Length: 246
Image (cartoon, rainbow, N blue to C red; front, side, top):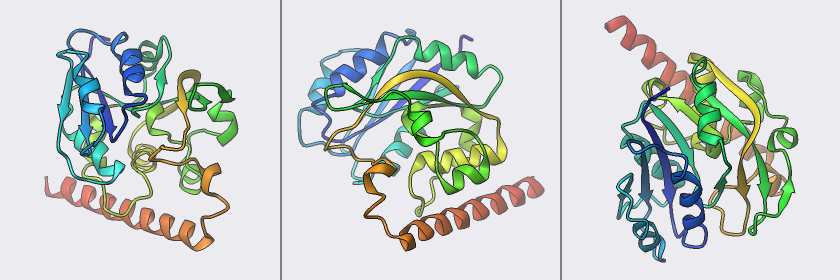
């Protein structure tokens, strides 16, 4: 598959890990691929570190003011031009073969989610299988109740943008929204290959369920899912009406 790849990264004060992450990505991309970085007004040296690569494949969208990783990612995705879109956090590490393995899976599917190793701030293994820990698998009801879609492990075909964009204002996270819409309208697959080290540290802008289960109230969990369900129904109705009008 000789398709253009867009890697979308949302950055905010990521100076500690962004160099190692970009190193692990760039070595797997072709000359014509791109990395779209949407920076949410970082106040540290994130942008200077990114510029130090002096790589024309890196496109930086500066001075964004979202204060929200969901819409920072949306901005990166909106500016991607590739036929295949990879999502990436600013602080993980891609393992050898990630791109080629996921591109192989996309020959027969619209969206692929890989397994991951969970590491600490120094990449020491905390859990050797994200899938095993989260019981990750496809399935609409399963992922509505307990999300398996981890954005930094996802890649998908551009066609999916027609149903996921724009991101609704009331969704728990962008990856859960993308996953649910893919379950409804496309052909997703989970592959067991561990293709990244998913770094967990005190500065993460997203949290694992394990990190907040004890503090998140039942009402909050119910509200998240009600909001998500409403947005899924609204988008589905709009999609149906557009099809009939067309």
